Length: 318
Image (tube, rainbow, N blue to C red; front, side, top):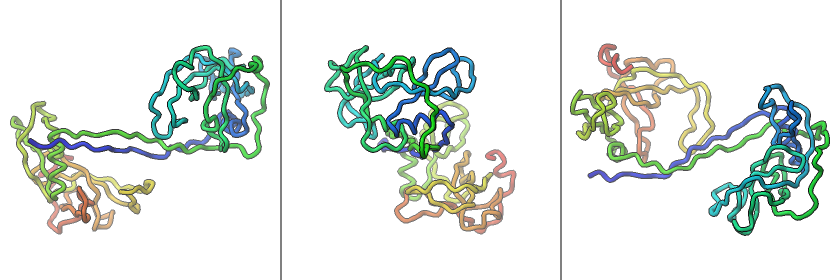
């Protein structure tokens, strides 16, 4: 029985966006310890502000200043904070309707325990010591028993010195991937520089990577078949936009990514083509894998020097 593999994986990329006048004023205001909302067509004050009315879809530009104090409208206790959450100790996620606002702002509340939190409790903003023009300029909310802020927000022109015009936020997903029996066997074979697929007992097609079931017949597969290592380029694309460098991908453009039908396989897999000028890669090109030292999968595929494959031999895999 194949041991089932499992490994932590991370998908991460920087998300960058420019800011319009409303969001720019809101985030710059936080840097200056000022909370701005926007007045909607029906007179409601929306915090956080939005650029278009949620009912009429009209553009909104009437900014107002609201108080840094408010009321908890609902909450949930977080007993085990995760990486990069606002607080490192247990805290409550709260929706807070700031004084002068008609909608609620989501943030963290620093409280000693869930018994200290309730709907309707009064809170105020605790500002971060160093502020850059981001929602994290609000470090958190904290309990407050002082006087409420003004219920009527003051008009604000949204003008600040050195306004924030764009933000970059790292988007990240951490998860544990368990590939299952078939793909665990496939990954273990790759470690030994072998490529293994599985044959369908009905249609007799060999699928690489194996999925544990035939995608055509829908029945389980178990017979392992070693394929390749050589194969044929069935189709390809030329990449002209350089991705952000990562630990395992920093390739100069242009380069070619291709679908490759390994000898003996009935499904093409994808891989990078190197060892040939990008403008000489073509359908039917015969290629073989190149392994980097210590790598668990081929680094790229290079031409074998064989004559190109006849189109009829791979047309079903294009």
